[in-house]
Length: 576
Image 1: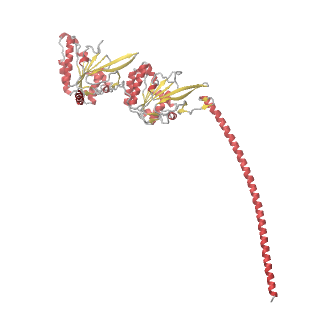
Image 2 (image 1 turned 60 degrees about the vertical axis):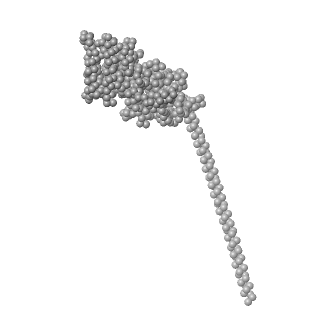
Image 3 (image 1 turned 180 degrees about the horizontal axis):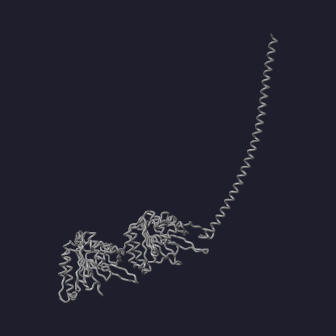
């Protein structure tokens, strides 16, 4: 019976919570569709954390993307000040107001006047707000901030009552509302009660660690809906707010069997002749001056030649410097930049915190939609955070790029002299392919070699190939083994020169022997020809003698016959 009741309970359709999409990048993914429709959301945070911006973007995106007009009630900044401030973010508030999609109502509250009269309630606000909502058919409302609204009420009991009345009033109007609030000293908000009556609470944090600031967002509660519970970094730039919801990525993304060239023929040959898998990650590690950037630029050049977009993120050199340096080794990246296939975004690692870098890369990838992302070098990010933070950030970045089927190349600076399997950020285990660039020092010179430490899912070379960087780009040389083992550089050149000299000498000797043999053959053939001529002469004389003898014999026989005939005739005449 109980099982039957449970079955019937599960068979009943449960209405899902209606939600209002914010339109803010990444936020709707975290809150699984948007903010609760027709309810009140609290956004709490300290000064400069982005509360007003997030609330205003909620209205702007709603008006532009979802056709939902909004009302912004400001208690600190005037409409003119807000319009001016948001122009830099690309939000034209005045135009939205003229089109009837947005109302900004500045309400000036003078605390001294309220203290003198001793009377204060929200009735006046309800009238103004109700009129604004009805005038444009608003679906979204923002009140910024609650502290200014209740600043004239010293009695917390009255504040609590008015706050609850405000929330009920907004819900009765069916609008999706956002309240902003300042954080308290030891509480989430100054009055410590707003979070309890709100249906959804989002906290914004702007923290500074070792002079590097990072903004983070967390959904503290969401009645009637599941949501992400981690802290998510978010970015504020000229496009508004971008939240990076990749803290809890799962390893269930699709993979590709398509192989793409690295841009270096010799390296493709080492990778089974077909290059790397599309959407895979590649680690290029090596000491300073080993050629990591040149390899990375070759990857970019190869992708652009296929007509694919490449996002190059250098952390040490300016874009023009990279283009100049690569031109010297036969890689002209400038045409790809001009054609819009290559975008170089160079910043110092210390410009952002780690999470902000992650959010920025997320925004750049979403805007540019590349098929290849190059981070050069990834080790510079260590200076921004701890080793554990760097590994966690890179793991999320790699997982997210893989989920988007975007190939990635990370260069890593190694200190040299350490164990082969170590890299400074310990990310080698996250990579699908690990290319190690090594310095080969012998005979007073330093040469370069490359080996494939691993490459998942394919057979690959186990050799260390010497490579040269010249005006023709990167050239991998075949493995050369001399009498003393594998040779590189000048030793290889000297050994090759010796072997070449020996080869030429052997060819000359062979040619001499062949010439002698030809001469002997010619002399022998001449002797044979002379003997044959002598034989023919003697044969001719013998044939002549035989013919003369045969002719004589024939003549004698004829004479005898004639003589016999004549004698018979004489006998016949005597008998008559």
